[in-house]
Image (tube, rainbow, N blue to C red):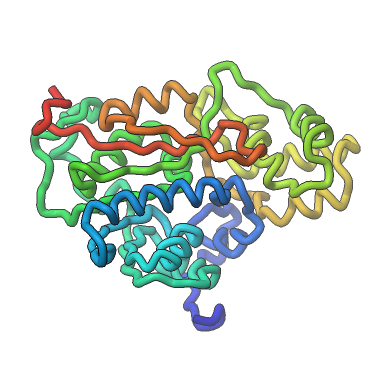
Length: 317
């Protein structure tokens, strides 16, 4: 499908603030690793899919059910390479079709347009205070998946909605299925400034892709620890200050501008490492935690392999 064939969604003419829901997908090509999986992470996913293929036996890999939360091109590409059908679950068909242009080996795909928090009912999985997990009322009518992949999904859902998200995932996951979120995390007392980010970049990676080596740390440099998130437009404000101080060059400023963060209200939640594990353990058993081998990842993007807790096997009381 050609770009001009994709029907663009209507945008509010007077809207000055932007987030993921309008034109952000057009700038995704500038969002490199670590916002995209690395080669070592790709092989890790491949191995987990192979593990599920073995479950069904030779010649039956088409029976493996994979759901991707979002329209992640790299996950679609991998499924295409492995000739595995995949279902994409995203809020925007336009995003799904637009990002599909990056996929060279397209798999057999199904698309679900919806909201991760609202499309799947959750009231039967949470108590009335929405603070305790309850699997005894799982709705059994939903299609169940062997693997649910979620690249940075836990970062774009704010902390107060994580319980709802996890309950929805459990509704869609087979009892022996893997929920595999890949998530930016932070250390408990980790603090950054814009100056420190660039200083580290000059020392470790000068001349290498700015996004790959600075994005995550710039998020933390402007992170609002009281509110529990970073706003993209604040990153751009910090970048401009660095340029005004002569800490980054005009050429680097131009490269940063490609990220399209000015006036963008898009929020990113970066959970503290142990805080995330604690939340996940309310719903899942942590089967494995993988860290990519690439040096820019620095153990700050855990890839969890999670199996949901069930009443049947006595894991949930």
